[in-house]
View 1 (cartoon, rainbow, N blue to C red):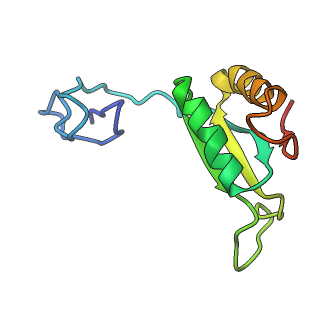
View 2: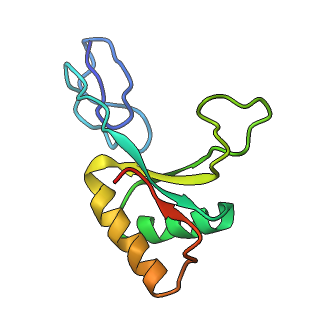
View 3: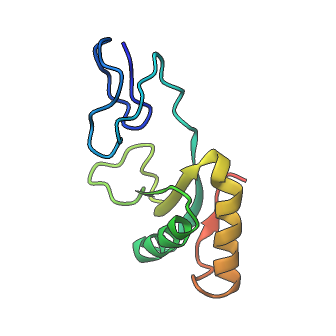
Length: 118
């Protein structure tokens, strides 16, 4: 079955382009590429700072996700209470760390957070 690489929708084999809004009739492929590796790079001081950091990274064209590990009613091993973390695609991790460090140095964000995974 063919797939859209943008939205990852599956189609019947007679269809050759994606009809999902926003995919702009992207051509379909026979096999999807693997999902990119996502890693957490920074533990923010709080949710507001995490949103600010996410904005800085998005301005630099880095896709970012925020994971709040401390906001769970029923704690799980993943919810270790370590707060709000910033995650990016592994290939953008070094650039993200550099931008965050620059923001810390320039006092755009606090130094209360900390770097993760390297």
